[in-house]
Length: 230
Image (cartoon, rainbow, N blue to C red; front, top):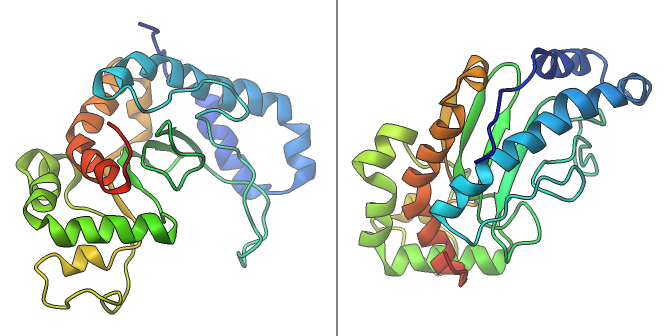
């Protein structure tokens, strides 16, 4: 099993500085530093998590490539944002489902920035057909859904399910359904909170693995709903 020795101190320093210097000139001057202090350590984390992920499910991909792999790009999509700064101020990793082509497929996620870290799993703003499938699955199997999202292990690890939702029930769904608050969601995910110092601990990868195990019932429900194996 690949060992992960932790993120370097410059990882968090880099993101603190880019928050104050979010422009192309600064980034170009620090591009090599970005590769050495951010991309390569995150790729090492992906490699270390790969065998642990396989124990949870063989259908999620741990790809350590710096471009096109599990490490998120630093470039922001600013097309629909009022904030036009070009770079993200955090690093992140996603182990997406083998059938998924982007971040909108079911996946496990790790977020690492100077202020906080969190990790877990779910699906973020799925396309309309998949969103409808998930809503219908919750509607048709409320007991299975409740078991996946309100167990003692789930509550102890994540607190509660997260994800923005609609104000009103979506068309075709009963407002009195016992799971209507979750049916109204547009995203479905569970995240465990951590602290940056945790990334230096030898137990960091084990902590992430434990959270992924606790998120697996949720992930299984989501995958079953959209016809993806787990």
